[in-house]
Length: 166
Image 1 (cartoon, rainbow, N blue to C red):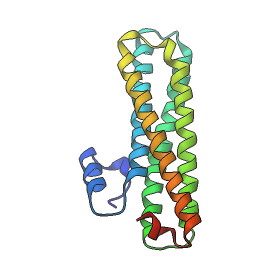
Image 2 (cartoon, helix red, strand yellow; image 1 turned 90 degrees about the horizontal axis):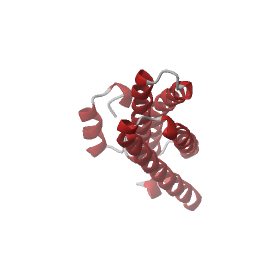
Image 3 (spheres, one colour; image 1 turned 90 degrees about the vertical axis):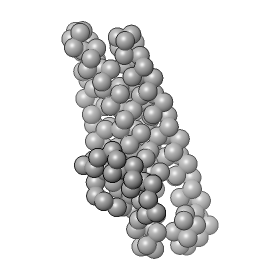
Image 4 (cartoon, rainbow, N blue to C red; image 1 turned 45 degrees about the horizontal axis):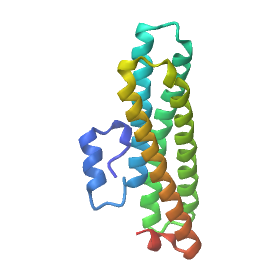
């Protein structure tokens, strides 16, 4: 892995994800999808606020979305590091991978709630950004749920979950 996905170019993240290395992979991709979804919703909030500064609830939503974006990047890095360690047969890593996945899942659900709350206050011109936000966040949730199920299944069926995951 090259380092934090937060400081890599999009091209670097795509190349690293497509590489033969175990990580970053689907967990980091889910985290990035969540971050992009939160960013699209944040853009919709900020542009609407530029024209309608009285919509204070959007400012609060934007602040929560910024926290979600930051958490998503941390979780993406954590997932990539844990998955690499899991493949290297380091003990106890599966539990941490599950913990990160559960945290990311909670963040996707939080993001969905924030987006739903702000939907009515967004200017019509920003509807496609909100659509992208919902679709990206839904995708992140689906990936995280699948990853958690796979890790839990592998952990319950084998003492060495890395063999089952790879």
